[in-house]
Image (cartoon, rainbow, N blue to C red; front, side, top):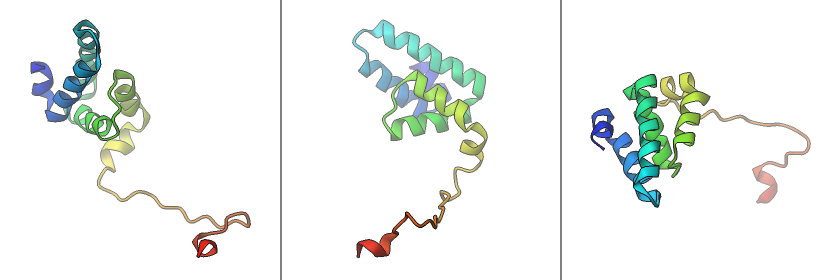
Length: 101
């Protein structure tokens, strides 16, 4: 818990949730050691952002955290303030919103 607190508040909350989720503290301890190792490997800022995403979507696991870090690491951390990409699709099979009114 102390090591998670040194990384940041989101990481601490993720570690707390991992411990609450496990039936035995030993299981949670190994998972939290993995989270700390990811923080050492990827940096505090990236792990904090990924932990925030995990908490937001209730992905309380090491695997989900690692997947978030590995998937879009460049896009995820450099473009987080931008609005999501919206694509307009024009195709004969797409009815559009006017069809339903």
